[in-house]
Length: 232
Image 1 (cartoon, one colour):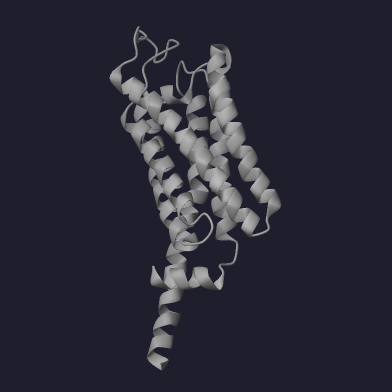
Image 2: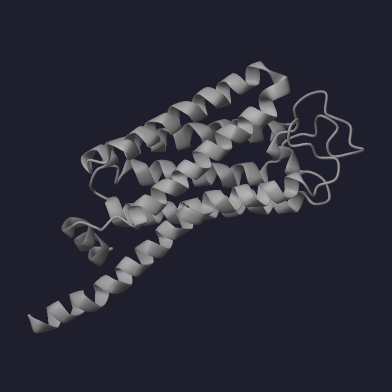
C-alpha cells in the first residue's frame, strides 16, 4: 500500500506538468500566430493588409515565414488537443473538444503545405493566375475546414463551461463560434472587404481557442481529472 501511494504521488506531478505544458501550447498558439502576421503586414514589400488576405504572405521570397507560421500554429494546436484529452476526457467536451481542436491544427498544417495563388498584384512582379491552381483550391478548402472545425470546437466548449457553471465563458465560446462563421462566409460577398473580414474572423477564432486554453490551464482539476492524468 505504501509503495502504491508513493508511486501515485511521484507520477501525478509529472503527468500534471506535462498536461499543463500541452495546454500552454494552445495558450500561445493564437497570439504567436497573429504577432508573426502583424510583423509581416508592415515589413513585406508591396503587401497591403487592408486589401490582401494573409494567406498571400506565404508567397514570394519571404513566404517561408508564413508557411512556418501556419505549420507551427498547427503543431501547437495538435499538442493542445493532446493536453485537452489528458485533462478533460472522458468528461464534458473531453472527446469532441480535443478531436476538433486537433482537426483545426491539422487544417493549419494543410494550408501551410498547399499555398494559395498570387492575386491583387502580390507578390510584386508575379502575374495573377487566371484560374485557380490545384494547390490553391486545396488551400481554399483547407481554410474553410479550419474555420468550420474551430467553430465546432468552440460550440463544444459551451457545454463544458455550462457544466462548470461558467455562463460568461459559455457565452463567449458561443458568440465566437457564431461570429467567425458569420464573418468568414459574409466576407466573400464583398471582395473589397474580404481581406479585413477574414483577418477579423482569424483574430476572433484564434484568440478564443487560446483563451480557452488559458482558462482550463488555471482552473483547478477535479478529482476525476487528476486520476485521469495519472493513468495517462
